[in-house]
Image 1 (cartoon, rainbow, N blue to C red):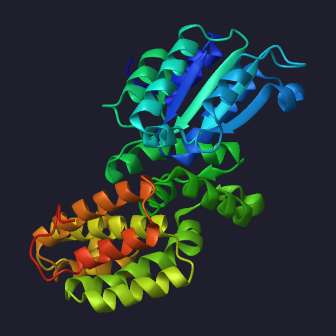
Image 2 (cartoon, rainbow, N blue to C red):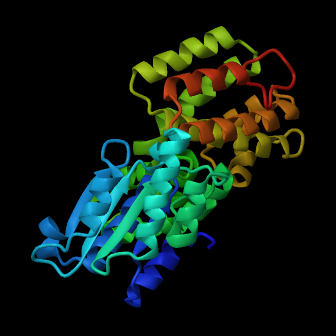
Image 3 (cartoon, helix red, strand yellow):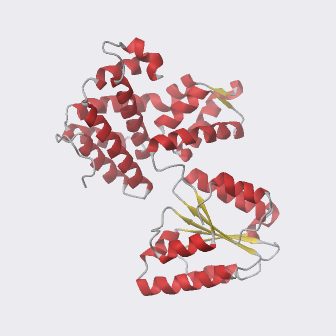
Length: 351
């Protein structure tokens, strides 16, 4: 059964259709939490949450305990929802143990308890293994991932960002939403956190502008990455790694730094496409940037061969996937910066 989107899941829930088993597959924390809340709210009323919602971890709890709870009628609630996180841990079992686990799961999902909605959660599963195939066959699989491509994810995030703002009681200008999604790499959880801060800052005005975003969210990050650009253009890995270390020690979040770098590379490519002799002021409207940032983009774009920028975007894409797959953030960022500053002409695909 092909994966459905969170919106398709919500539509199905709104129609009251029974869903004995759901697999939330993907790494977007915001979409996953949105689905959790909707599933819980659909099947268990607020007064019964203490009895009707149970949580387990596949990494820490035995399958027998999880299925035992699933087959136990809930107290003081007609239905129960059981959330099971870290399902990818089952892939790390030995082959014999994994086969037994899949057998028991398949037997339960073939005849699920009518009073239980079982919700599994995994960032990623190996689709070649029997575990993933069994879950896909017997559960509703929901893709809690906008896209693995950062550019596409940024585009798809924009409607959800407007929804976040409405839920927080504020209006969000279109260019402010685009700026947030671009600089934060379409990472919805990070965007939601920033909108909460921006809503508090806007106060009674109840409107978030591009100027607010520039002031509170991205200004420092943008100019940090422009400074880093000098080192990457000059192919100076030692300086770039020292600069990265200082940013991380100062508390810069790797996912936000990665988003700022991806934003920078896209702007450099756009700047290279401008007619020769274009000034920073002339580039403002073309690049949708503030005057000083547009000036920096035009100036820095002249220092990069185009192949270095396109290869850099690919390296950023691969680093994004490694971060989202749970790779050690500092190691991922250090490897990325070393790649981007490498004296070699082509580095895409190197390990």
